[in-house]
Length: 230
Image 1 (spheres, one colour):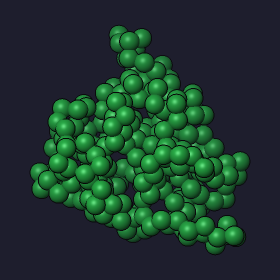
Image 2 (cartoon, rainbow, N blue to C red):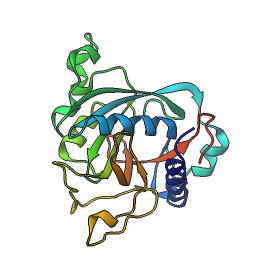
Image 3 (cartoon, rainbow, N blue to C red):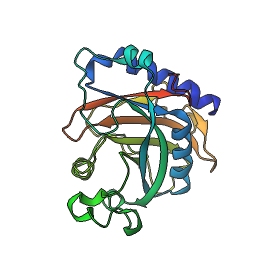
Image 4 (cartoon, rainbow, N blue to C red):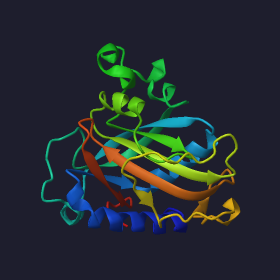
């Protein structure tokens, strides 16, 4: 079970994922429970970004859910773990927008590390956060994605109190908001609050995108632990 506010938010996100399914060449099924866990790690690690390794289970995506979100131009065998839902998440690093992509030595594969780029770890997919910044890939993000076997995901989080991280906007790119679109007010204390983090921060907006290293967009479908879409 996840918090009621998050269940409502990911259901709205899934509606958009379904309505815009023709814009994507593949899909990845993401348990909302894991998203809630990642949010807790993210807030406890502020002001740093965090890097999270994601692995898939032995269970395939439910075929009826796959069919519901499948596009006409869906590609198969595009990335590692395609067709299997995510079931494991592990926070492996924290840092600024450049250092966060480099794994600590204990997470790297000693045999293949030099050949597999800065993320030479055992995980299939990778997610990193953008605290108070939209979920739009930077040059460093795109470069790090070249060593990802699965897909890369970026989680943008708008929150208050902001501390040393005021909301950074004005970045061009495709954005996918989790929950209702945010509305700006002249007074920041009147912004919509989606939910409250365990650290006490007010969560105003969440954004999530997924992409393949070739620059192709991947549709994210939030599911429960049984693989059923919200």
